Image (cartoon, rainbow, N blue to C red; front, side):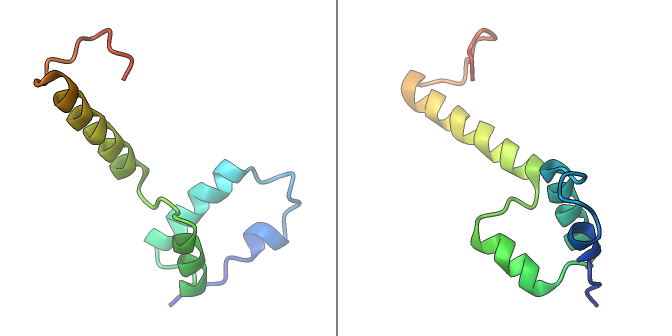
Length: 82
């Protein structure tokens, strides 16, 4: 059952809670089942990333595939900026 988490926004001045903290809470609340489906849907509509670790892994995986396509191997030098 979803719990109303409006207090995060409505009870705190907007300059007190930073955007990064708010994002962290959204991820925490969805994992614990405390974010309403409407809010989950709204975040999904804008492409919200629920799992940063998976997203970062996938970005590096895509970079690795591009490197292989360009160089024909996976011998990425340590000095490579990617």
